[in-house]
Amino acid sequence: MTISWYGHSCFKITNQGGHLTIITDPFDKSIGLTPPRGNADIVVVSHGHYDHNNIKAISGAPFIIDGPGEYEIKGVSIKGLVGFHDQKQGEERGLDTIYLIELDDLRICHLGDLGQPRLTDEQIEEIGEVDILLIPVGGVYTIDARQAVEIAEQLEPSLIIPMHYKIPGLKIGLDSADKFLKEMGIGKKPAVEKLTLKKKDLADKEMEVVVMKI
Image (cartoon, rainbow, N blue to C red; front, top):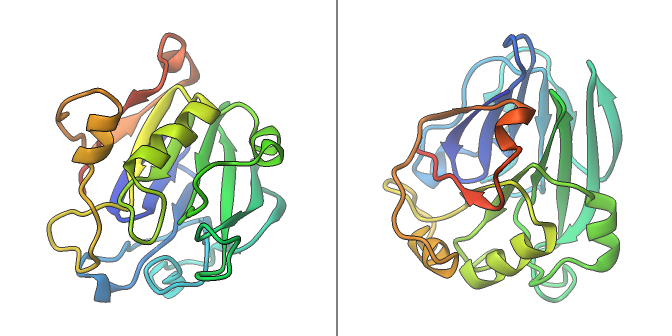
């Protein structure tokens, strides 16, 4: 599996061999970053805000998943769970779909714009084991750095990739990833452009943080 990041909550996930591509939460150019381009087989959208649902940016004829449910597409298993975009059970910003993606024997959890400060026992049970956690850390519209650490501790993934935080060019006011790294007890980390993984690569990892660059 190969993972690359376009910024914000948008990732490109490609299976081993490179013949299947998933795009998460494609954003509109108005946020100040370059939207994703190219073909995809599957696009998952956590919620209907412009910085997460720019489906028209993706070419080809992707299968669109934009809400809770269980899906099986081209050998990929995807489960969408109900979450909340705020701390008041969606009263302020609506719902957020949490996605669990199973590909190449790896389980990726993309939390979207999660705003609830902790996951419920039911959500944790439904999510199950997580190899790679894609988690918002920039606060303001989502959980903040401290809450992100607490949720990571609830799920205990092998690998954590922070997302939805302030980077150069982004016009949305968020915190940087530095606060999250500090809360995790680690210093600045060099960012990587691309992550290529197999299940065996995560065997000895325990909540290791990988910072990506676009």
